[in-house]
Image (cartoon, rainbow, N blue to C red; front, side, top):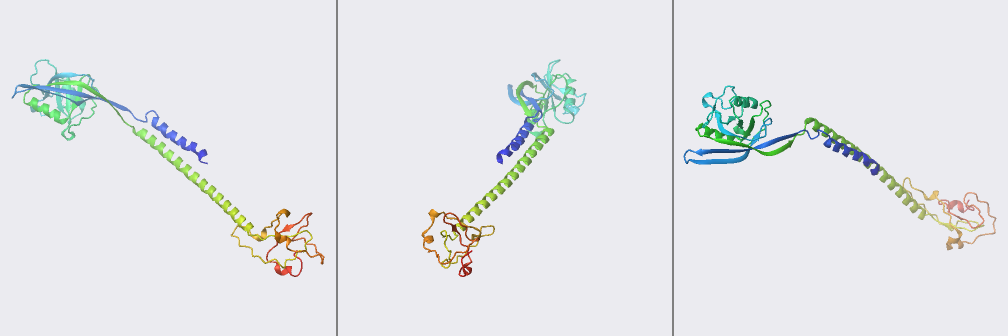
Length: 333
């Protein structure tokens, strides 16, 4: 039974595998690149150059994945627009001269990423660096800013951004260099795929549960029938072993005075009673008990149709129990 039902279970597993491997089951893959950010400035107190490099930035989704370099510029304090959202925002670029390339540094928030990038691009910035909000700490976030052209856009953490802003606000020229970092691939599972996989899994569980229930019911019924059949055969053999046997010869009168009354054992419900069975013993296997009885030839032997059947050889019959009283009056018939 189990082997006939296993194809259904295999079919459920195949359905789940198909759901997981189907096109779109894993959703779409999102690719992004980290950015290597290098800053360099001269400490006015020690007159020594300070340089730091870290792969702490992240390129925007619509940004070209290429490097950029320039002096850092931040929105002017008097404009009160640290996010650089206004179209006419002006930037403070210490050390900047003429058309030298520069990089805009603005805070996240206040408007969309696209508005920030376009506001800096109007001032001829070669790149835009956004720093995250304070509540996000050292984390960066993906940025969507389609329609900003070929300007390089990256995001850095809040501590890194504030460090550079404070230097620039002290009128210290800071040069930033942006490089391409590591490529990352992040997979997303769409909601449609989740529903499809869930339905396939539930279907597999229902089919498996139904198969198990059917299998164990069939097994229980089969075991019960086998147990009942074996018990019936054992009880039948036990009753047959308790049956009394008497051997007679052909022409024997058949006096039953010396035969003791034997009570047939009670059989359980559905069993076989001793009174319903008869046992024929071949002539070669007779016990001495049959020969110990001497036949009487003085009296004629009446025909007995019920208890004995005549044969060419010697006959053996089972004496019925409970008829001892009738046997004293005449031959057992």
